[in-house]
Image 1 (cartoon, helix red, strand yellow):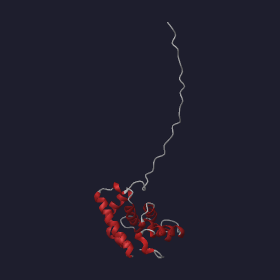
Image 2 (cartoon, rainbow, N blue to C red):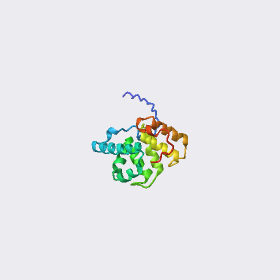
Image 3 (tube, rainbow, N blue to C red):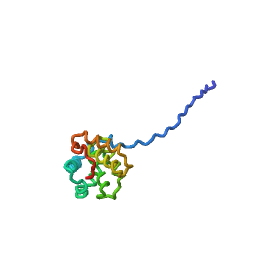
Image 4 (spheres, rainbow, N blue to C red):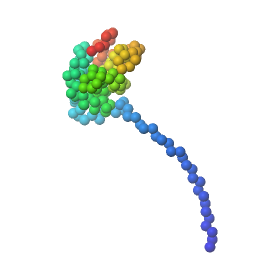
Length: 165
């Protein structure tokens, strides 16, 4: 009987590379993920709050009166909706429906501001100006206020120094 020819295969091993978990970015998720009812609620609430900001009336009282819709704002914020992020951030800022937490407010305002939302930019500038939730930083405040006033909604605040609502 003839002998079987044996061959050896060279086995190369590759190192297993751990993949880093992918962080969800609020900027990558857009408002189209909101259902129609939630979209309507967020748009209505945001427009009302925006009108108050333009007229100089207090957002604090408005948020207090409407914080029963905070769950909708939270849902929209977590889905990456810039308007929801502002509304939800204001809940933390004014401590309506949640414990006051300026750092969380800054997180939500930042997410909104980075998407180009004028109210998010204005609110973030306010936090930097007064040192609420972040270290007081006039340069960053001016940066965010400037960005917000370059958008048509916020032009009424150009030149203002006291931005408290």
